[in-house]
Length: 297
Image 1 (spheres, one colour):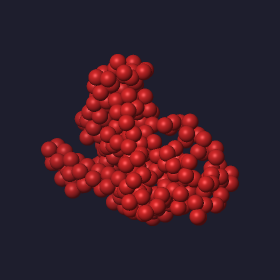
Image 2: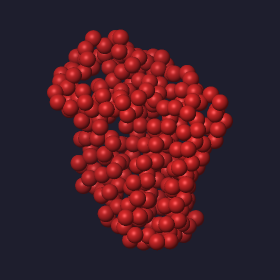
Image 3: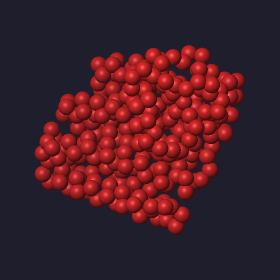
């Protein structure tokens, strides 16, 4: 495996986005409770990445590489996402659920989550809940599988596109805060969504971990999984065919389980397309600027 000689595009992206959030937090510091904790998280992420880059360039090593390639990206995404719960409501206190609800109704002449009650059963609910949480595993499975190929170019490009999609979705949450139909449409639902075995436990864990972060639009579950699906088709074709039915079920689950409006899913699809197009363009320019020709398209 070739040793990294400098910062990767994903490192520059992470530095830039976390610094951007750091500056925003400083600007609104007087109105954000626990702002110091949020600033500490961002400072921790920046300093940790700096240390990892230095150590990886200087010493390399399998364990160090695993921290740099897999562990740090996962932790950084989770910590940044968690910090948004203490940030968004204070820098953009409005919510736009009413607009998203209206758009859904304009498209379908009905409320999709309410209409889906006609097919609700515990078996279907259990199935879709399991599909929904695959979102947390598909990027990691893909990343580890691709990393085992020891192809730095494919792995670095894939990591850049996935992290870019995460960060762009976070910008969407800041610009268009929305809490989703499980809260805003609950008074119109005539039935709950009981499962068979794991549904209630999984849902409770997700509610406890994610809380109310105003992260409905665009659907990150949709955008991220579609980017991973695209990358698996490009770099791990066998994995693509395994992921495909899971991703289809996941997209349906976002609305069936009342986590998202349909327009959130549409927004997620558009975000994935933009990420793939724009991200590949940016990465191609970086490849050319650094003298790489392979995989620059």
